[in-house]
Length: 246
Image (cartoon, rainbow, N blue to C red; front, top):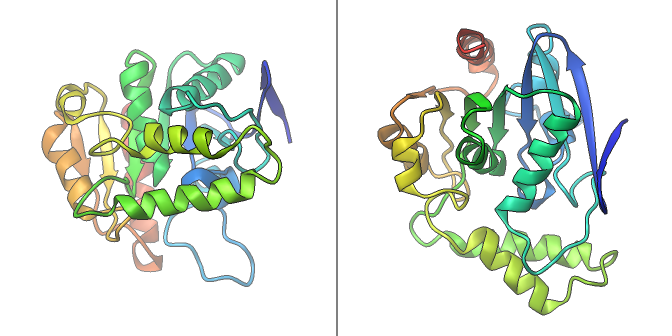
């Protein structure tokens, strides 16, 4: 599996298929790795399509492990926030030679995708947001707990990740409002076409997806989308949406 190196950062990625480029930003919270898209034998079938496989007949699909998830590694610094992830993602697409591309993000990947829409509006041509995360009804402690579990794991291999660094990064990532990476004012002015697939739990509140659709000028809601009963229709709708903007 190839790795892209940017200074001390090593990003693991995989490319499949051919056609217009589609960058995948995986579910998994702080463990956002391309393997999370895939079904593991012997475990319950995942509710989502696997775009790395299911869309590679129509697109050049690029999956990546975010820094310090899966096989990607990077130093962890107190000033790390959403911007360092966006730099990794854009630098990878530069490395692969793709100036313009679609994005599909699941869970935390939806916040990465919206961040890319803001940071590089001339480059992201369409975005699919599956299970977008966000703040609703006092659910912030769940995000902090998820982050703290990741910290306990990473402290085994990252001596620089002390309590002060962890507190600073936690606040930068999950101390904000709405979808964390961007604010409502940006979403209300976002020119990128969005296809939003709502969640229904504390990490992925339906209210967050509904608000994105109500705010964004060019957003469509796809529901129901999860599970075997909806899989074929979901794949067709996602494919058609992306093809229409290629």
